[in-house]
Image 1 (tube, each protein chain N blue to C red):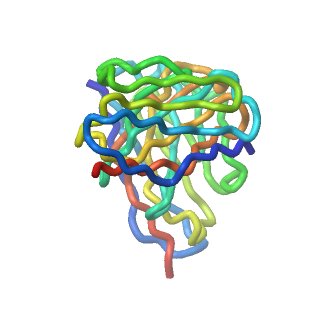
Image 2: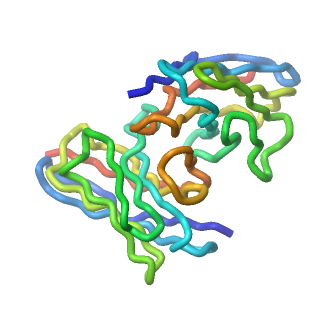
Length: 106
Length: 122
């Protein structure tokens, strides 16, 4: 299985720029997607195909990368961005998710 | 507005069966592949199974192959997950998700339901 590795947690202040990384154990081309899950809620789609912003998602969110290294950037971070962020690949079978990065606001 | 509403979760004994349902609305159900994703308590997300828009193709993660069956009724706009021989490690919230389009490679989870909790315990 393709293992996606994310840092477990980050803490930033509102107004700052934050980058959340996702490293794949093998190439996934650009078939990487990002989701936000707020406490007690279902996940929602933020970014698809590595760098495409889902409709309705604030332009503060952006994605980049290809192959094995991917990044989700939030700039500037707002208090409402407190959540866990997951990457997910759909190039290799089975589809896999990263372990999630919990973003906390200072 | 896309809506996905899961039902059928609850407490079940190990080795028993349970069937989850997901009622879809707000889009043309038979145009989209659908999937189930689970999340164990305090853990991350895990893809479970996917079914093509017409039900002709299904895909499963290895740990549920032979035990879980994904199916759909396009006339009722409903997705199902039949779970047999349940184990304690199947305990999780199960989310129904609509994929972006059809096709296994390259797809993504565009919409998610609110989830239904399945607890496998004696």
